[in-house]
Image 1 (cartoon, rainbow, N blue to C red):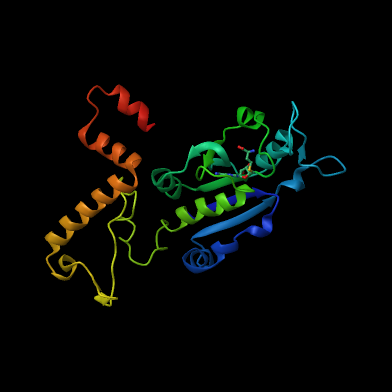
Image 2 (image 1 turned 180 degrees about the horizontal axis):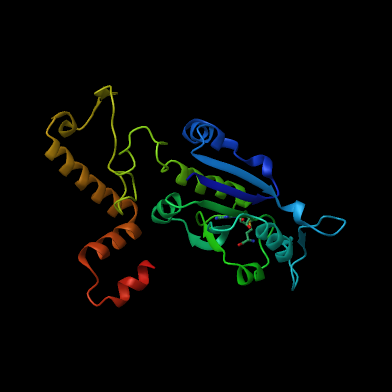
Length: 243
Ligand code: SAH
């Protein structure tokens, strides 16, 4: 089974874009995933081929029409999760990426302008996904981010089979800091423990670093990690925070 990505967009020429290079590009060439951009405009029915219209209730910009997007979506192969890129969506996580990468692929809707007519999400089974708390000019970059995160996890894509396991977020923590040769650079040494060859000490050092860095840099992640580790005292409050 190969991971099949269909991207509904007004800019199909943006795909595979950067995913045609490096790890993802090689994997594409090897047939480990497929990339099918679909032009939303091909599913319009009026003579102006309009995909958008002015916002109901007034305001700036244009809104993508539900009827056009639904027609484009309904023409795609069924059986894969359908995701829409929107800052109103649930923030993408490594856990969700892992689940998606283990599945048959994704169909991704890329917004533009002011976004989608909300009725699209009532009329179709669509998961709304955000890639972070900032505004992009379109969903295409978000789709590329999501696909890149999935593709690197596909079997045979990453060089060392285990190199995904230690990454930031996989354990709920940031990854420990990394070093490489030369052993001394501008008077700075690689931490002695990493040159000791003592694997148990190295593992303990890395764990401690990951915990300290997560606590200081990402108190939000740390709180969730501690909550999961200690276990909620009554269940209710922590569960609510993490979901
Ligand atoms: N007016 C909208 C933003 C529209 S930005 C709002 O404030 O919610 C135009 C398109 O870019 C969106 O429809 C979406 O597809 C994409 N986009 C922008 N920011 C995004 C983000 N953080 N995550 C995912 N998609 C985003």
